[in-house]
Length: 287
Image (cartoon, rainbow, N blue to C red):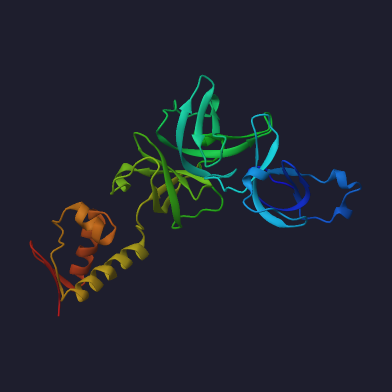
């Protein structure tokens, strides 16, 4: 079987003046007629050294503008089912074209655009195979393909996030390329922008299945980890730090990768435990 829009491991079954015929790694006895083998053509222009019969190789299988299959040695920036950041190169009355690393640009029809596409800008794109047109297409209207929820995610999971839009509530993110979620402005303690990748934690899964994401762990494990990181930092610097509860949020984030609010809570907890003293200009370990 040949999977369109994916990397396939195929074998050479014939050579022609213009290229090679590739077929899946199956026994030809599985087919009543050898001519029934599904094949795809690899242009000779795309091959640096000649191939031999029965040689196997990994190729990306795509479709041209007429819907005909072809194989490419080049691995594109995005495969079917993936969600990546791509650059728009042109726009027409029927759609926009994106650079995905192949000779033919990836088309996003107007119906699959969340907002009008501006050439030269980068967008978060989902790739899919359209059976109606027999073509690989893209979409920036992500909710057509990704759900606002997932049975495979749980509160407290650390996840990879890709920011795809900004709203009045916060930043919309693609979670692990499988689901859509939201980082509220109150949980976005560092600057975020569309197309940015970041690590997050599943903060809450609502009754309707929608997912709230936080940039930092806010449970007991997260609090304990931050407190220990502060103590370790103090030990490494002679028991003193000028990073206090009065320090700038950016300075705290750059040092501990947490919000100022989380840092202040951790300092307060350590102070109550009598492990540190807090002064306007410094915090110190209690000996």
